[in-house]
Structures are given as structure tokens and as C-alpha cells.
Length: 274
Ligand SMILES: Nc1ncnc2c1ncn2[C@@H]1O[C@H](COP(=O)(O)OP(=O)(O)OP(=O)(O)O)[C@@H](O)[C@H]1O
Ligand SMILES: [Mg+2]
Image (cartoon, rainbow, N blue to C red):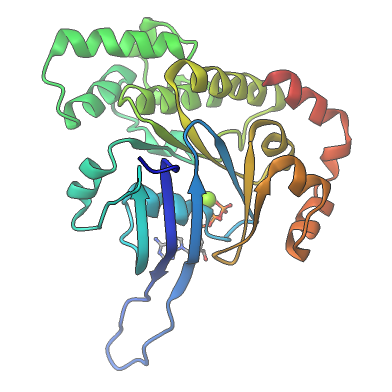
């Protein structure tokens, strides 16, 4: 058994510009540029970096939505090569992703019940009564009620939409959850309740988290270790306390210096929430 639940080795994901007739080929974007990461079971690894640094692309490549240009992804020490999206989804079923924009990830014409049910059907659950039971259990686990099954996305607040995003992930029984900016766009009190939820379900469901965020105060309080990303590369990794106390890389220092809220009461608030 590998020491790591998830590992990436020199992972590269490049987006190539579409070729146009009679035009010179344009250079591609290396959104992920040689990332090697190790994640231990049960830990929360924060992935931090400015907008466009490749955080979401790294997350989606690990999930299997993008085919890596090169490098490998190992789950429990075993390589899961990219053959097709369907095969990768099966091979990496232990990993689930909570979308950066939960509102956009929900179909506006579908009730919450149908959205959650569909997720279970796609993953092969053929037992209707069992699906309803699971859906109700997960709605309760994220602090909502079974009555939410009949609501539509536009009838939910931003915080409730996040909860649905998390419920949809949890019913698939993941071992690793990638949370992409789970608190962005929410006001402080809702951020706190979402973070409390994220923290609580980690223990209840025995989860390992990859926590993508550019909110350093949240990362400091929730993550065991942090990987700092800049232009597709991981420039520094380490225990959260060590990175915050003694950042080694210039870019990390710049990021920390650009986070004035760290010294404010906001940090205390975030701590109370988790
Ligand atoms: N599907 C795509 N096709 C082409 N380029 C893409 C695609 N997705 C992302 N990119 C580019 O890859 C780079 C990294 O984007 P990514 O979304 O991973 O950044 P991010 O760190 O998640 O940013 P943010 O904090 O704003 O969410 C950007 O330059 C972006 O324009
Ligand atoms: Mg992103």
C-alpha cells in the first residue's frame, strides 16, 4: 500500500490553440507545467495561487476531465492512465470535484432531487428507493432537509447551492474531494457555515481534501499542508504553519504580503468556524 492516497508526477496539461487555415500555429498554454504532489490519506492539502495560475486545471486533470499532455497520476500508488473520459471516471471514482461555481454546475431546469438522482444513476445505482434514501440522508448531512428535493437552483441562496454541490459529491462516496474555491462569492457568515460543514463531513465521511483557494486566511485555518502555484508550477510546498511563518519563495512572500486580512479579526472568525 502506498504511503500516499494521491500522487502526481511531473504532470503537464497544455491547451493548444485551434489551428486556423493559412495562419501560423499559435503557441499553447501550459496551464499545468510539471506538477509533482503527494497527498496523504486524511489530510487537507491547500492549493493556492493567483487567478490563472492553473489551480482549476490541475484539479480537473486529476479528476480526468482533461487529458494530461505528459506525466502521471497515481491513486493508492497505482497509475491510472488516461484512455477515455469514461474509463478515467471509473478508474478515479474515488475522486470527486466540487465545482468552483455551483450555480453554473446545476441544471436550472432540473429540481435538486432530479440532479442528485441523476448523479447516482450515472454511477450505476439502479435501486430507486435506495437512491431516495441516500439523497435524503445527504441533504441532511449538508444541513438541508428532504423538502429541498423539490426546489430548483434559482430558488436557492448561494450558500444553499454550495451545500447541494457538496451533497452531490458526497452521495458518490468519494475518498478524495477536490473543493474548488468553496467559499468564493459568499458573505462572511455563509463562508463560515460552509467551512464548518466542510470540516465536519471530513471526519464523518473519512475524506481527504484538495482545497483550492486564494483566500489565505481560510487556507491557514483549514489546511494541513499547502502547495503554492505560480504560472502552472508548484513553487513551494510545506506544512501550513511553516509556510506562513517562514515562506521560502519570493512569490509566496508576495502572496502573503498581499493578504492584509490575515492580521485582522477575520482570521479569528474563520478559526471559530472550523
Ligand atoms: N479549457 C481551456 N482552454 C484553454 N485554456 C484554458 C482552459 N482552461 C483554462 N485555460 C487557461 O489556463 C490557465 C489556467 O487557468 P485555471 O482556470 O486553471 O486557473 P485558476 O488558477 O483556477 O484561476 P482562478 O483562480 O481564476 O480560478 C489560464 O491561462 C486559462 O486561461
Ligand atoms: Mg479556478
